[in-house]
Length: 118
Length: 107
Image 1 (cartoon, rainbow over the protein chains, first blue to last red):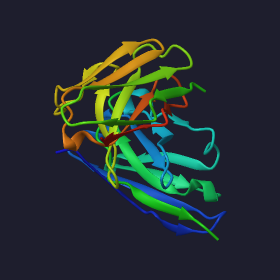
Image 2: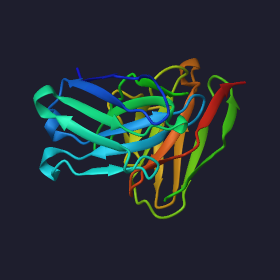
Image 3: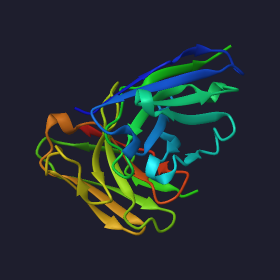
């Protein structure tokens, strides 16, 4: 069974940093594109970042709202995806989901809550 | 950025009804569109990818159509478990963009 389990969320002050993790199992991690998607409380979904697969050189892409502050990365030995978030802003407050897939965006993890507040 | 406009933003329907949600892209996205269902407090679930391909395990009462700039999600014979919020997503170009969502409620 394919599983994605996020962790690392919490409360942080503006300007602070946080690293989210997504532990994966049930599939060959290096074969798949991976994304981070977020959802502010009571609002819609926003795509955040993508890491291509090994065959495509792990090339990354970011939403403009996080470019230069967030970094998506992988550890193939741990089958894990990460999102390093620096210089956090109040508008980064959201549930962060990791998602598998080149075009299928399937499945999604359960999400981890990040709250940025003074 | 490509703008995705979903309509309606909310919809009331009865059990057994057939409903259609639409998504318009601000430019050509070919077939690079997905549909997702989200229930309160839960992660989104993929229903359709590449505009019309049903995700494995998703009931055939869900169907997607369209290409270019106009797309539809149709749900036939609504059941209580189908009342949720639905989102479209374009993945033709970065940044990927979601529609604003359609909340499907019981009439």
